[in-house]
Length: 388
Image (cartoon, rainbow, N blue to C red):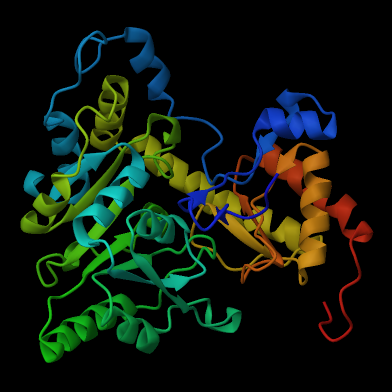
């Protein structure tokens, strides 16, 4: 099981993303029943929307399952446009946010050009760039005391050498929002620098996979900054990660640049039907938000009592500071022996001393807290220079 979410196996093979071990892999390694394995590493919901079972049972979908879905995904796009408060010309769908990220990279990163990205963040931005023959300008974030916020001055400078700027807000894996007005100030600076340098304004793609949990979005800025794209998903707040549906939202001309890279029929007919329904009737999504808002502080309090230092979060996950990489590694192995799978970070990662865990339901979260209480006394001692 690789603890690193970003691996390059050789200098001649493309960059790739590595998941944590599968349920079966965890069960086999630790000799536990596969049904006892719980995923705290994927930031998904513990159950799908209640309406989904009825949709599947009725078996009435956008088209017959023997046919391809409609080429324009019209009703899905209409539902998304209504949900995000935009026109249908300002939305393009994809097979999950990850296909949207790939489409944006193809649209805005010619081979040999660079992306600018604040790290640590979701590693797929860099992976897509390297697979496209591009380069990554990685800008370290500010420290933990500053909420892992972007270094705006450094990001602005990096953007002068990039054709594509990536922002994740709220950021994964830190769980934090950028400070109020920070993204808008960065956009203004990027525009000003591009005019001064006599070059085109780079595209700025903001991954908003967790936006519903916070309410913050760059979508209202799309008229002022037509180079801005918001990426949204049905995987997190809408609790349908298995259906693989995501969207790019932005100014019409910008969306047209992205849409040419959409593969035909990449979103399945069942996914189209279910996600369009969820976007039109957002009751289940709002219920899921409420669940997270109520459960997150309770889980955080339990883990804090165990000494696992949960960091502030506006998302459906918590970043836990275990103080040292050795403690984080020991905790992760002990959790997986109990069938609880956290997200881990490699030894060279800025968050090597941390684990990331999903906010699940109370019973499942209690299992995690009970495990943390049992594991804590067995972990390596906290160095004296960093008292608990």
